[in-house]
Length: 130
Image 1 (cartoon, rainbow, N blue to C red):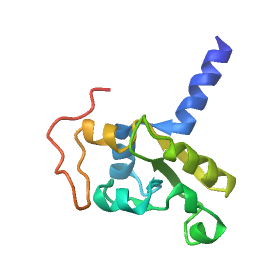
Image 2 (cartoon, one colour):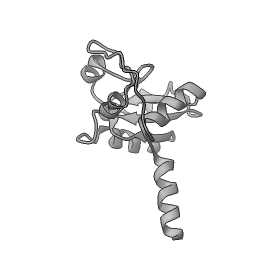
Image 3 (tube, helix red, strand yellow):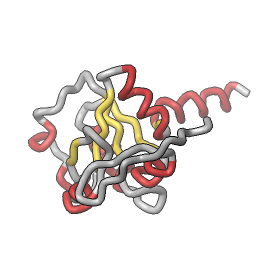
């Protein structure tokens, strides 16, 4: 049982779902959504207030302006993409606090939250049931 407790505590320490991130935005300024996809994906559609640093471009120079006291929540397209995982790993190696958004922007939209960009969505009136 202790191993399971440790496993689930670690899992929650390293990832969050869209409703957790939305709540984080509503109740704190400690979370910053970080889109780890290429710029054309970000320009097309992204989580409101998100910043974009493609995982392939993450290094000391491209992240030097970021506040290390914040928690960066990396995301990408969704479960068929691992840019958020690659970005999270690079950000941790650079000394940042990081969580990964489960399901990426697809689950963000599935839970009814709005997006910004050239293909933005307004979101809907329903919310996550968890």
